[in-house]
Length: 194
Image (cartoon, rainbow, N blue to C red; front, side, top):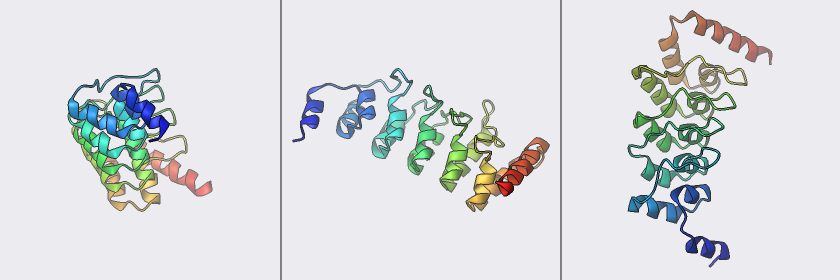
């Protein structure tokens, strides 16, 4: 047995630590036992779910989500949904959105939203689910015309990556928003000359 694994088996880690250090088996056992704090955070504001998504631990993340409030962000502005989209974890991202307890409008320190990342990673089903869920919520709505640090909008990314369904949904929602249409023009113009 690997000496490091032997060391991990001796220590009683919390769920947060198991997720941080990618100790799948212990994390799963803790979740199945129900003896854990899903909202425990470390000094950087990471929760077990954010670490699970950051460390691409799909199976464990799916078991933890259930009715969890997934809107927590760390000091970098990252949420579990942002990390799930970053690592193309479609099933996890969809389940987080379905809880209805995720912050779709969260912008991380790099100026990205879950929608822009989903479009960048060609996650059509996730992007559509974000757009449709955003239509249903009353407060804290996602700014569909948000421009990230690379001067990209979800629409420009959807068009670039030929995600027609996503592009048409975005255009349909924002067709009467003059500010949105001006941003599209500037973004497309900027992309043409860069």
